[in-house]
Every structure is written in C-alpha cells, then in structure tokens.
Image (cartoon, rainbow, N blue to C red):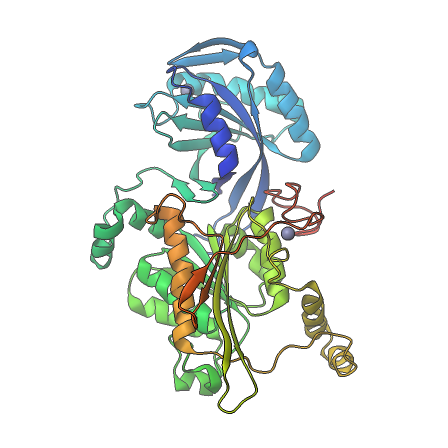
Length: 473
Ligand SMILES: [Zn+2]
Ligand SMILES: [Zn+2]
C-alpha cells in the first residue's frame, strides 16, 4: 500500500490562508502546483510513500466564481484547465484547495460528489494515471487533504500528514493532541502540552553523522519521544572517541562496530517505543535516498564538506528542514594551548533562509577534495602532497560537554519550531554559541546573487529530478 503526504512552504500556506479565510464565512478556492517524490520504501513502515511539495499557489480569481456560500463554492473551470496545462508541462500534480466552516474538519458529501468531475477533467487533459490532490483549510487554520487516484467515487486516499515548513514546523494530521503517550513522556506534556508529544511520536527524523554530536542528538531525540529515527554514518567506533560517543563501550571499539549500530542498539534498549533504523553508508550514497526523502526533519552532524553540501541541496529540493551543527575549537600552538575560539553553531536550512554555502559554512573546494578522496584515494594523496587539494585537518580538538550542549541546542531549535516555547520571533536560523565568551550570536546572511540554491526559488520544493538533486533549468 502506498501512503501520501504533503509539505507546503509557510509562505504558500500564508497566501492560501489570506485568500480562503476572509472572515465572510464563505467558501473560496485556489490551486497549488505540487512536485513529487516517489519513495519506493519508507524505512519504518516499509511501504511505498508518495510525497508532494508545494511549488506555486494560484488563487481562483473572484470573477470566475459562480457561487460562494458557507457550504458551497462553484467556479468556472477555465483556470483549472490552465493549471492542468502548466502541471503537465512541468511534471507537477494539481491540488485543488478550498475552505470549510469551523465545525467541518473533513470533506463534505458535496465534495465527494463534485471532486470526481475535476479528477476526470485532469485525466482527460493530462492522461490516464493523472492524480489530483484535494486540500481543505478549516476556519481555525487546520489542514487536511486527500489524493484522488481515479475519477470514481471513493477512489481516494488520505494525506497521512500535511507539513507547513517555515519559521515554524506545523504538522497537521487527524487526532493531533488526543493520543495517550507513554508515562515516560507525561511530565514533558506538563511543560509543552500533549500535541508536542503527538507530533514527536509521528515524526520521522534523520541523524546524519554519529560522532560526538550526532550520537547525542540521536539519544536526545529518542528520549524526547521521536517515534521514527534513522541514523546514517559510515564510520566505526574507535578508542579515541569512546569518551564522546554516547552509547559506546570499549567492546564496541574492540569489535570495530559501526557507530550507527551502537547508537541504534542503545536507543532500542531504552524501551521508549522508538523505531530506529541504522544505515551504514555515506549520506550521498543512493541507498540513503529513500530514508532521507522520508524524513520530516534531518540533523546534519557530519564534519565533511561534501556531506554538508549534499544535505544543503536536499533541504531545498525536498523541503526537508536540515538542522546543521558544527563545533569549532581554535587554539594556538602553545603548551598548554590558549583558546582562540570555542564556537557551537546551529544552522537551520529552509526556503527563505540562506544556504550553507552563502553562510560560508561549506567550501565547494574542500568538498571536491573529499569527493576525490572517496573515489580515488591514491590520486587524492598525491594531489594533497602537491598541495592541489585542500586537505582535511589533523584530529580537531573536541570536548564531550560542548558536543553534547551543541546537540541540546540543535534539538531545542526543533522543539521551538514545533511547539513555539520561545517568543513569536524565537526561531533562529543561525545561532552561534560563543562558549568561551558566554554569549549567543545570531548573525544574518544574505544569499550570494548567483546562488542556485537559495538566491532564487528555482529548486525550492522541486522534488525528484534527473539526475538526483541535479540542476533544474
Ligand atoms: Zn467542501
Ligand atoms: Zn546560497
């Protein structure tokens, strides 16, 4: 069985809300062009998943509306045919959107009987197999939706979840806030309410990189009640990182066990009902694609430029928020060394925020060197000796209390975006904690004018393209 979901950009959702909820109590309509990601197997429920992403909002103009009342809207289909034409040209799916009065949280029998005609029109225009999404916005701002698979009464499947992605991460699904959680999470609900526990239980979260910070992030997510976690890393436990790697023991180093297995096993042993999947691979390997595209949130805890560059693209293409972290400890060469900087950074990547390249976090040159090292280690060593490539640093300084605090900062940013415990302006796209100065800074960055990732909307939510994460014309 295939399941379905939709991620909508916050600015798109705001546009729709302004067009649909006008305070007149009447129904209004719009379209959203959506791209697609075809996931062959979700790593947790092990079923196919089709994920849609909002690309463009097209309001139905008032002069094309034939009737609008609190229980009904009818409009001329000319604008729908135009939307279908654009969808066919771009490989998109059309979502038809309308609003309902407060008490009606699902589609009406009127919708059930009207919508097959719109699906039939889509099939006639764009060919057999054309799907149509139908989205509903209730008066109190809740989203629900379904996917029409055939132009026939009843031939639809619900959207498992609707995500609104922006300064906040809004999750819309049936029964939110009404589920009984494990006793372990009751005191958390006393602080943040039951809806957060429900959100966390539904969340699919990726942790890329299982070193000092990544292992701490994964453990914290599990203890917070995140229901589905995937950990991705291609390294093994080593004696030199036993003190920082949460969950690791001497025997794991002796047995040269993959970090992901050790972290996954520790999480399973907590008995908190977390489904945890371990993938021993580099994040850019094709075997990670289904898992990454299945995620609602990804934590980037790798220390390589190439991995960061990969997640940087993925965040914008698939509207999966990436929370990227980094710890920089800079000391002089003295004995004992004198600290020059001790910085922990948490960067959130979403559309309308600057990408990691434009924030000067990743270097394309260093990434090229890493790519060469993975593909052809001998050539890499030779070119490094000749100083043609940027070499990696010698073991960088690391201290467990700071890698772990950085993990807390990153996970707390996710809680803020889900629950909003800080003030309304509390979500921070870029936070640098100057541990040695005892202060936080929130520097702002602007996109570089020609950046293909964050300076234009071209790739935002474009979903599956050939080649994977390739340039869209
Ligand atoms: Zn309706
Ligand atoms: Zn950029």
